[in-house]
Image 1 (cartoon, rainbow, N blue to C red):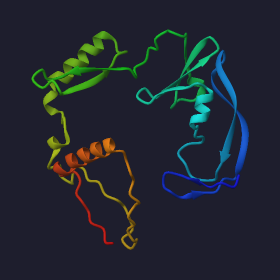
Image 2: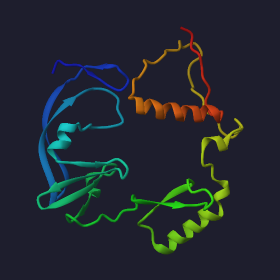
Image 3: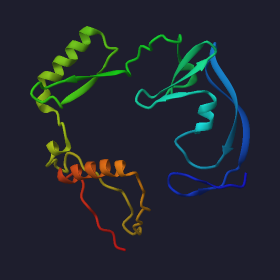
Image 4: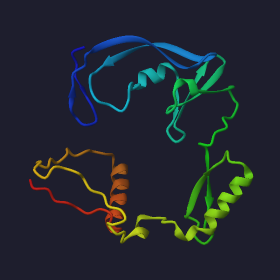
Length: 207
């Protein structure tokens, strides 16, 4: 393979080559296997393998980023696999059967006079534990920070963020990233919140 790859950092990576390997998801009897063409690179990464859309499409995978799970059909049943767990810990359910998991959450209102102040708890908790948890959250609602504006004036002795860079290293400005107008609006609002709360400040780099 002669085509270079470019990662999130923008650096060029030269592939070592390609290899065709069988890839299995799930466990028997809820397992599917396809032959997948992998591109091999020698580069540091937090992942051993990255699966692209064509591979996920071949398995007919449905992804839930909220629950950190993937779901795919296997013969007449479905397999529910947690992305963060090894294959030995895959959970299997009958097609149409609801998955019982603590990942599913429900919103609850903590302060009646402030309807926007809500939090989430797992739906799979026992009723007795759920009632105790809601009661604890309600009684201690005054100690929560519901926005960044409520946590101003934090002493650097308590918490401080800094970049451990060498003093003689030349600063480099990153290339500008372009987003959609909707994303730009959300980013601008969140940045303004942090600036207003004194959590971040604008730094001018020399050109």
